[in-house]
Image 1 (cartoon, rainbow, N blue to C red):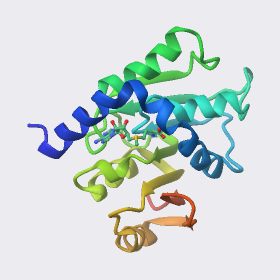
Image 2: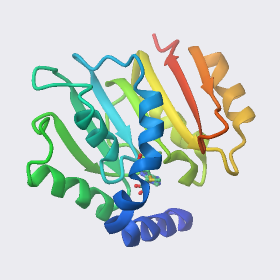
Image 3: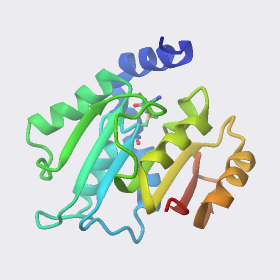
Length: 197
Ligand SMILES: C[S@@+](CC[C@H](N)C(=O)[O-])C[C@H]1O[C@@H](n2cnc3c(N)ncnc32)[C@H](O)[C@@H]1O
């Protein structure tokens, strides 16, 4: 049975999906700019966990982080059908140039429908704070990450126990970098997943 908090979250995002981009594209862009610094796309299998309407993918394209020749696979998943539907409309109307390599999946972080150790890069941007148990969500992201995968998690600071999260991560990761800028509403964690084999 679906957890009650998750049902509320689905309802919240389903009912606001139609104006999400207008309201949040500028504030999210500031975060994308930070997370994409020095990121290399070529050859990667990427996951955008809690992708919403696909603003992150829009940003990658419109700011020319990639071009027609960049080869990467982008899996985008979200628990809200209406948020994903907004993403799908952009795909259908040809607003996205990187159409072939994008796959949209309706599912729940914490119960990801993927085999273990498949992703080279995992992003989750302003989504994990919605989970009833952030650790459970992060654990599932670890499961689907390859050894040495890069993970970039941006999480709303409000009501997040970041110290507990960071101390839980430390023994399992390498190259941990924490970006906690006053003017950004999220804390951003960059690290490499270690110790899988
Ligand atoms: C603030 S929005 C961020 C969306 C997107 N990452 C962005 O940068 O615009 C949070 C998203 O997390 C999704 N979400 C919340 N709980 C989730 C869960 N358990 N599994 C997958 N997605 C979830 C919501 O449906 C929503 O689309």
